[in-house]
Image 1 (cartoon, one colour):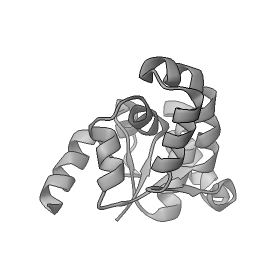
Image 2 (cartoon, one colour):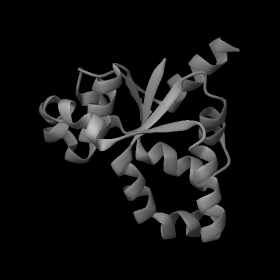
Image 3 (cartoon, helix red, strand yellow):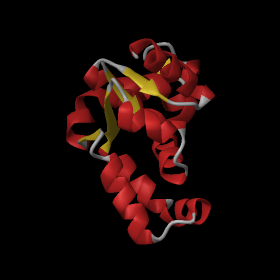
Amino acid sequence: MNLVIDTNIFIAALIKNGLTRYFIVHSPFDLFIPEQEMIEIRKYAKLIMDKSKQTEENLTDLITDLLRYIRIIRNRDLLPFRERANRIIKKIDEKDVPFIAAALALDCGVWSDDKHFKKQESVKIFTTKEILRFYENDN
């Protein structure tokens, strides 16, 4: 099964070596993140380094390591799905259009703990707790 992860999930995995990072590395799912979100992650690099007590080099290495388990879906591959994604989520949170577009492109759900994602009903949203249940059932 494919699953799109939102930026906050990726950032949580960068900040703490906890369940989120573990799920990414050991996920039974094929994980994806929209290309433009990598720019967003870089924008928060200083905050991530401060919270995680990592150097820039360590953070870069960790991003590279995690991206072995997450595929980047290119912006151009999302273009045919952006208009529909806009209709679904733009009024709720315009920043989430890339995640909905990616989920539509891949015909899958989104892994996010942001409650506002569940205000729409077009794309299935999975919280970390729900991902844990999938993982436990898979093992």
